[in-house]
Every structure is written in structure tokens, then in C-alpha cells.
Length: 192
Image (tube, rainbow, N blue to C red; front, side, top):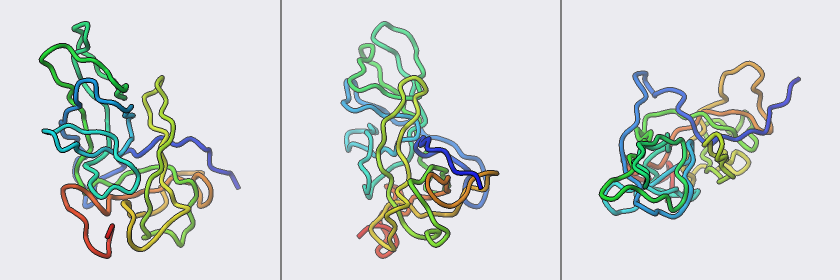
């Protein structure tokens, strides 16, 4: 048997429940906002306009998964980056367009710290990791080692069907948001 590689990358869209296109929506990031956001990180709205910030594990109001951003840098260059560096300065009177996979029907793929067949259908959270500035990828992963029937933000949809991917440490799984800002918290399903 082969073992799975330990290489977390956050969450990545896999497909949409019921079929159809996976798309992202436009949000903003405040000028000088503190905290790195990497491609694959779960994000939430700040409550100020459509600004987003990184969401802590277990949040009940995630808006989706960060896909990258377009902005005009302080030197005037139009820039796309797969990550947002903390305290990035923008050109005066401009905003950063953050691209977010915000459809609550998206099924995401992600690496779990560990997963067993019995965990399929259970709820789990994600755990933050160290993002990679060179690739822009998140270091977050699905916390399959701590599953429950309530109080977690992601539903484990199943093992990702890929050759060489197997249950156990560092398996890749498919998950959906059980709690999402656009659908709310459903008692007994996700959070409280």
C-alpha cells in the first residue's frame, strides 16, 4: 500500500452539488488589513461593506474559500496574487477585489490530518497551517481526527476518488460547508 503525502493546501473547489459551474464572487479586502490570506483559506466577512478576512476554525459565518485577488498596488501596477500579504498598501482610492468561492453548494477537496471510512458524513473543522508565499497556497487542512455530529463547520462528503488516495493519515477528502453565512446555522446540523 502507498501512503498519502503530507502536503496540505487548504480547500479547493472539486465540483458543485447537483452539477453546474463552480464560480467565484467578488469581495474586498480593506487597505492595510492585518493577516495573511492564502489561496484555499476559509474567509468570512468583516461586517464592513463586503470586506473579508481569514476565518478562524469553527466559525459559523464563513462566506467561502479565498481564490486570489486583483488590486492596484501602491506603485500603480494592476496585480493578481493567489495570496494577500498582511498590511498590503493599495493605490489611493482603490480597493482589492478578492475572489471567493462563496456558493454554499460547492464541494471542496482538502487534505485531512487523518480520516477513516466511518468519518464519512460526520462534521469536522479546518485547522490553520502555514501558507506558502512562493505558491500562494494555504497550509490549512481538514481536522478529520476530531469529528462530531454537531458543532463543526464542514461536512465530510467522502474520500476524494483519486488513484493512490486512501483512508488514514493525510488522505484527501471532499467536504461541504455545514455552516455558511449565506445559509446560516441549522440546529443539529452544523453549529449550535
